[in-house]
Image (cartoon, rainbow, N blue to C red):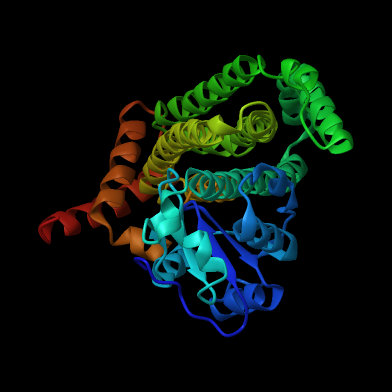
Length: 420
């Protein structure tokens, strides 16, 4: 955009993005038109931006324009992978505020008097008060988007926890509740601080002091949940017989949900404390808002990476166990099918769990080998022939087993003759 204002005929508006979110402020008709033209209206939601007005401490026409924009209309959109491409097409310009880009649209002589100063193109850019006001606006907008993103995730995780609870049997639910009981104190303190925030409109020093030390407790249970997922995977990969593989993977369908629920609740509490932390910094030390926002985002990204790595490892090992069972399909049809179906069930649960946490998933389900295809597959024929031969050698074989051994042995020989 350089020093140019994007010309519009339907009202002044400002588009701000932090990469994960997008906010549009200004004339209500212009805001709606912009969002609709980019296919973002339905996924957008309104939010109150008026709280920023007292922080914009520069005078004259600039203050008037800023106050008007903040008061008229503001909508927020959580960007998806697809809508993030739209953000690129819009052509936003980077600003001096860390991680923030924007688009300014309006008529020269009004909005351009102060918004365009960020690019340094106008004479008023030399006015420290104006620059301070623009920086405050962008930092405040970024902070508001960060809070809304966290509140959006909190709501989605609540729905996820309800869904997981419906899938748990009584034993697993009790196991999960026993672990979450250790988070009850954290939950109570966070809810109390959030309730105080809703009544007072800010996070007091007293409210913040009651929650700021609780991150270590949350981190401890996050770590335990990740270790438990690793243990489930190790159990499955240690098995070799179809029956044992099926039992291990089938058991994982419930056990994994227990620890996904714990992780989801920890992530939710992490985000709730983040909302309180941003509010507290905005009130007590607004100059630190950008730094706190970036630190919280980095912390959340690290947690996402840890969860992604552990759940990817879990699924790779469960899928390997299911595939090992599928190799034994000729002699263990039901068990191999159980292992494959259970692995796919866990995969679906993991994908559903990742989504509210903002983690992309692209897992493909395992396809069970059809019976006729297995009869023509040298690997599966050899597996069956080897198992039947072993049973016969130790005197366990029956007439039926012996007959099957002859049939499979002949099939194995034919497969070998064909170069398998």
